[in-house]
Image 1 (cartoon, one colour):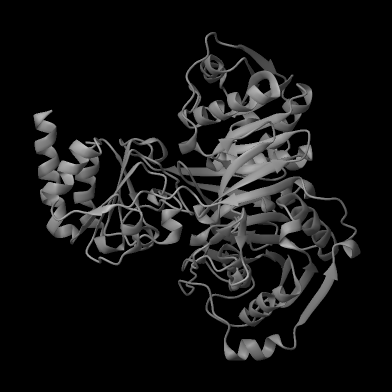
Image 2 (cartoon, one colour; image 1 turned 120 degrees about the horizontal axis):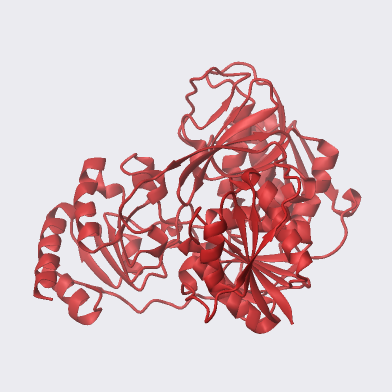
Length: 322
Length: 273
């Protein structure tokens, strides 16, 4: 009967939806570890967010201090390790967000605990399934230490629903915060009215064959028609057609939407690693030999120029009839 | 500026992976330097060079843990321009991220580099842990998933960009530190040492290949083979790999002949629009 700790990432007012898969993974682990699910929220001025987060867990430990405004592994990992020790927890979980991937291994080091990254299934108290070799293998691993640490792949754990009753929020004293000389300077956030890539039901990605930035307009039109998120291959990002943070793949985001459109995109292994778990994959490419067709449910061998306008018109017809 | 670059050899990621009896079949594969580690070596070399050419300033030491054959990959990195190589005898199957990080910690304590630069993850295990664990064990700052790095003129700090889920984050870190790099670190303007280059840098848009001259020069460079025991590293792994399986195969898709057919299938068959 020992607790499972889950890192709850927040804005100043809310739990981030990207942490809900971690809550699901934590609940699955708690089923094996027998104790409560305790959330840890870290930040500056996050009282409201901690209250919001408390709907999902048995208790929230809130570390709230102006010195903790940036998600630095140097300051967050020791707090997570301290929370694990104080509660005698035997599991520590986070979503495999950029913050989770940065902070959790460092926390594992401080705890002397083994860690499984980017897990897609909890198989037991200490065993997990996780993708390796760019998703070309699924690997079962077993952590041998008393404390187990893992990050959960967001697309493989359903977002947790609120618990029957909200847990208490316990404000924790934050001692001296040592950043080790690391300093957050700025965040150039991408502003988009579209849903988050990792959470979108539909993703429309363009590749090298889109040729130039202006041509992404037609993909954006398709994206917005379907209420989806826009993605891209590395080649399209590197060519400056779209910002780098739209990249789907081993570098970039992992997505698993209901519907994935790969347009003028060849399908390099590194790209497939980020989208192969999509439910339905549509590939539109003029090259019939493009590897993307090997994972596509529906393939159309054609240029995007000849296809996209009529595709948009046809989908509009279907939508109008609904 | 002394920079340590831990590198891992990985099976060629472009070859089809063979899995049989719960294990990955690697006898027929070819081995290469993990791509992200190769970018790290390129990063380290650029940090010791003027972008417009001229004398280098600094030392780049590459280190790997692996079987004896790994010397092939280390020689390639020496031919790229690294100054020295260390090969620590090890067997992939008997390693995990924690043991690798503990071994590297011992190397760092011996070599006392100003900076450790390594790939964000190896493309076989895809753990994305070693840099962070190493920084944790050393009590050093960490700068992960970098797309740019600029060393301050006094060599005491670095300003970095990280590609995070919500955009691009800029941070400043004090040295010594552990940095892990993502693929855009090999961009034209991504790496700068202010002590060597002015504000404008212009690199090739890819990592360098070993030149014939580099290959000849590498023959005279030191490649030291040691054991983990000689570094005082003991203890086992914390994460056991039990078995590998093929991911569920997708059911064979179909080719459609027209946009109309595609939309009709998506609507009536897949029911996704």
